[in-house]
Length: 305
Image (cartoon, rainbow, N blue to C red; front, side):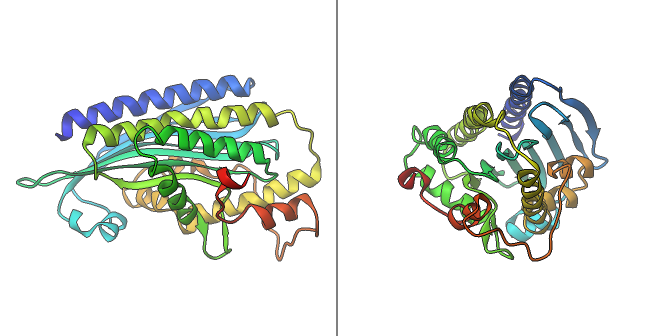
């Protein structure tokens, strides 16, 4: 099963990267993605595309990778000990968009496929992915739209999937050391293999295809909102949470580094500018305080907004 399935998934992922880059270039209107292809010494490689200093996006990265090898990295066998002694193929598209305007949220999306094989044994495979939104100055209509697109993508398969993947997202992107969510969530799923392969692949594609439907209307609504130094300073401070999550908690970052992936590509999700401030607390009754009080915790956005 692995070879035809793997080529199918890789073809989809490369096309998804192309479509997302084209749409985001058009939405930005001021810069283009620059591509770097890379090879991994132990097998595989990828293509990293980065857009900088656009009209909307201060920096955005969309990466495709396909890595393979005879031995699983420690981060994966710790999570799935039954994979020890198998060779593996891992492929995916991962992206993060960091807009310059603080009223346009940061967004992240990822879809991936993994297969591990051993002679004389059935292949072990699964899909994963999701997308999540990190606003600095939230708008309820944006959050509701984001989650409605997520629900609409999954409901045709099973109406139980959206609440399950939404909760999984809230739990995965929880910053334990801060006691807050990274943003307002969305979808996250991993280890998807309990259904037939074709259905699992279709679910992954539905999530990948939904990202642009979720994000582009928000860009259009917010990209021309005036802002000043106060909003920009708060945006740079809150970007620090993104760095903290990626370096402390994110399994994908660890997997990429442990498999010998290209470090620049793995870390292209980092914001181009960020600041930390000791003991920051927002002013009472401010827009900044509203983010902390009302948004950085799990909520049923579709029911409450």
